[in-house]
Image (tube, rainbow, N blue to C red; front, side, top):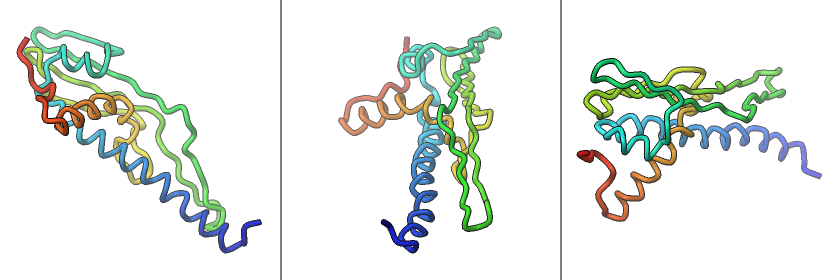
Amino acid sequence: MLSRMTMLRLLWLTPLLLGSCALEDSHIAHEARTRLMGMAEVDLESCLGVPDQHSTFGTTDVLTYYATSTSSDTWSVPVIGGFSFSNGAYCHATFQLRGGRVTQILYSGEKNATLAPDAYCAPIMRTCIAHLRETSAVGTAPVLPTDH
């Protein structure tokens, strides 16, 4: 059996451990906003997949991707009288492309984890950012930007 003191320590460490994952996800979502700017549409779709929605307005395209959390990230700390943290559960990542290149990335929805803005947008961007990090580390030219 764990002592009461050990249980209290574990209780306080759990939010920190969960928070570190959310912080990494937040970093991925924010890194994507810079790294994917200027990317050609064909490279974006190769990286992220086919968008959930696609609209065209003259020479401007709007691509929207959806991510929904399948886990329940609501937890409480009974020691503080039932104080609880509740996280958002979905993100819509909307890309604006002009002339076939990404010019703007916007995140909307219940996208923030506790102390980690835009963390629920990371699942959309994770594969693309991992690919860009890998190609940069290997020394090969990254996907950005390609003429097609």
